[in-house]
Length: 164
Figure 1 (cartoon, rainbow, N blue to C red):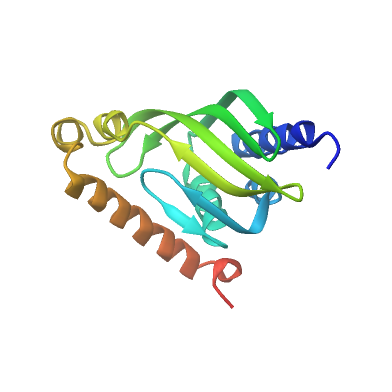
Figure 2 (tube, one colour; figure 1 turned 90 degrees about the vertical axis):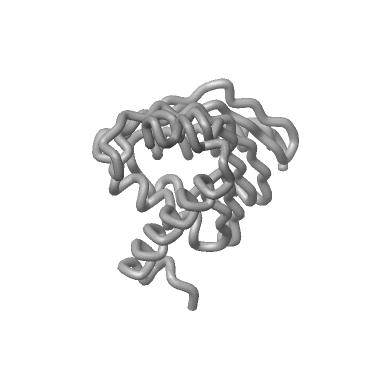
């Protein structure tokens, strides 16, 4: 594709601009049908990543998103973004600092990897418990299990994300 890096940069900009507006449909438009997404909490593919963003857009009442440092090269890209929100389970304010990596094919994101410091996130979201125990694998597994359970409930209420 001619000007592929420019096209891919625009896709990343559209993705995060849509997220900042809590426009999950705009985010979905950036993803391929069989996108793979992962971060320290989720490992998702197919329709599930789209459902996750939809869920986060709806539940993040005070969510703010900023992004910068978008770089693309060939079929890959990266960006830095930050999410500020209240973690609903504890009512604690979180500022999550995230570096994202992307792979593109045919004008869509096919892989999306978000990296963030889980200990830092747990410290903010869970307080003292998170600070003292975030290093323990069982804490991350519990957070993952709870997040996946919540996503499963969301998907059960939204047939568009259920497998055919």
